[in-house]
Image 1 (cartoon, one colour):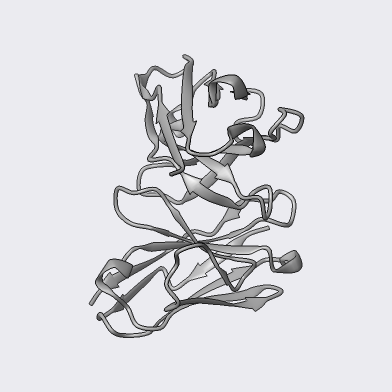
Image 2 (cartoon, chains in turn yellow, brown):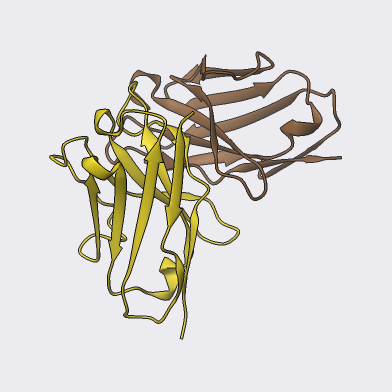
Length: 120
Length: 108
């Protein structure tokens, strides 16, 4: 069974940093691209970043470019999101999602999310 | 590319037919259009990809159609577990991965 479990969320002050993790199991992690998608409270879904299986292709949404860094450790079956210079509008539930083999940004499995709250 | 979903909220009774619309600001290449379902407190679930192909394990009461800029998700007979928010997503045109604003299907 495919499982994605996010962790690392919490309350953080504006301007500070936070690192999210996603532990993957139930599939061959290094065969798949992985992504982070966020959802602000009561709002819709926003793709923010993805990473290819070999970390060779790493796109970002304009809203996080230069502040967030995605990475992965295939030996640990883990995906990460380093978030720097956090702002209030980064407050959201952050989901880890697996890319389908059908297309790079079609997401066939999602974790339950980890909540990031940016507030003073 | 902007995806506009309508209506914002659909109030229906179990057993009724639901028709959800997703309109793109420009043509979606190769029908790279997907639909996701999200229930309260849960992660999104992939329902439809390629505009009309059901994902693994999705009941056949869910169907997708459309091409170009106009797409539709139809739920033939609403079951109690189908009341949720539905999002469309295009995964073809740069930047791929854009989601629509969602349609909430609520119990009338």
